Amino acid sequence: MTWYLLLVLLVGLERVAELVVARRNAAWSMARGGVVSGQGHYPWMVALHTGLLVCAPLEVALADRPFLPALGWPMLALVVAAQGLRWWCIASLGPRWNTQVIVVPGLPLVTRGPYRFGWLRHPNYVAVAVEGLALPLVHTAWVTALAFTVLNAVLMVVRIRCENAALASASER
Image (cartoon, rainbow, N blue to C red; front, side):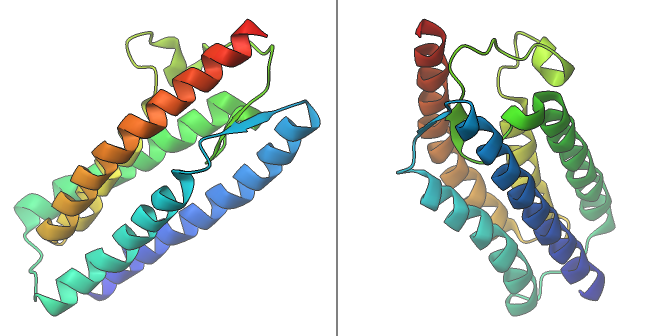
């Protein structure tokens, strides 16, 4: 359990690093006329992601979930892969990446990194979905994995619609 708690804490620290990058990038975007969209769903996303980091280790401790190597090691590999994909997205979008939907009108869509694959318009959300399922399952916290996955799917419908609308609106200006 100790190493699992350490893993979750490391993912939490990664989230703090994301927020630092997002704050810097938000300032960059706003200085260039960035438009913020979807503020209504953002607090729900923060709550969901916080809930993941709190509930996974709580479920492991309170429900005495075991570490099953046949499940845990592949899930750990997926958590690491999700982090790699997330940071590839962040690096590819550069100062345009953010945890909020902020679009600078007139800028073309990014077509490098994972965004060069036209069939995968939102690779960062793939990383979020994989991590949200895999992180709890590293230590068989299946209730947290299921709850996060279902709630995240609902939020992603809202988020992706919001983001697509914001991008379309910005390209019209």
